[in-house]
Length: 88
Picture 1 (cartoon, helix red, strand yellow):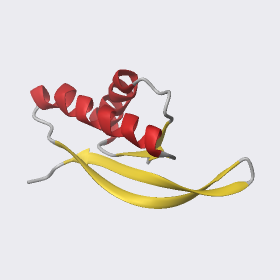
Picture 2 (spheres, helix red, strand yellow; picture 1 turned 90 degrees about the vertical axis):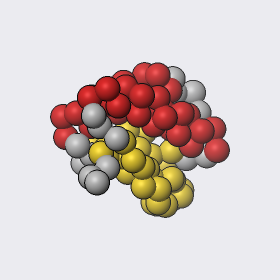
Picture 3 (cartoon, one colour; picture 1 turned 135 degrees about the horizontal axis):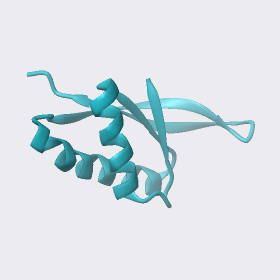
């Protein structure tokens, strides 16, 4: 599964474009964000991507979870957002 790492300085429109491309190609993507600012940008990107994908009949959903990652040799807790089309 492809992983998109989002920071508080990420452009939500750019992340949404990348997210939409991966969803169209592979049907699933993981988004990782550490900190409130990064999670905010990730959620904005998912919201924007829903608008990009809706005209193609793709209803994007997001499954949140926690994950532990290593940054500069230090273990951190990140928010993991699994995005995929909703299969009704």
